[in-house]
Image 1 (spheres, chains in turn cyan, orange):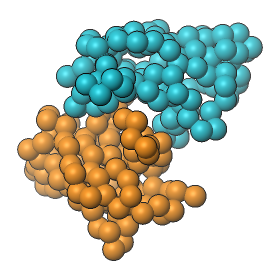
Image 2 (tube, one colour):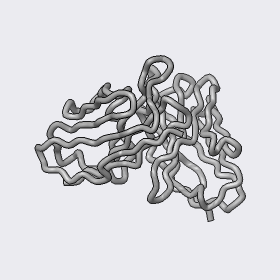
Image 3 (cartoon, helix red, strand yellow):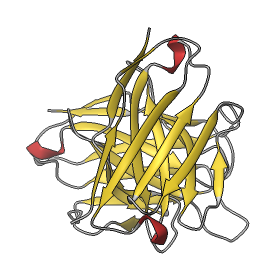
Length: 111
Length: 118
């Protein structure tokens, strides 16, 4: 199985300041079709995960443009350009290049 | 507005079968891929498998011998059966819709339902 390692585990942030989360894969996430199926989710307490980014850098509909994704191969990053209070929560990366689909362990973003 | 709602017993005895239903409103299950995922208390997310509206199925190899996903198109429901459960199967179970066009991710999730094996 592909192992996704997120860092940091916890990220204290300051409102208005940037934040960054890393997701490293144990194998390349480039599929045979040329796509890289790496997504990012936000999960607020008591809520289901919310899709933020898919295929590394594509922002999902309705997601604020302060969220951005980047990376290639085995190293990926989610960036929040200016953290807002509503961004507090858990963030997960997920790969779907290889079965089984796997998730990172999560990063807690807190003010 | 698309909504997914999981339903089923919250308590299952060891060795029995866990059966959950995902009731989908606002979208036809025949038009999408649907996934099941779970999260044991204090642990990470685990993918159980997916089923397409046309019946294509893929399971997590770690659960493949015990899990069955199915569709009920007349009631617009997606079902999960997990056989021979143990305490290790205690988790929040969630259904989710695959993003379309296919992008290897989930754009809609149910609230999830906590199932305890005891």
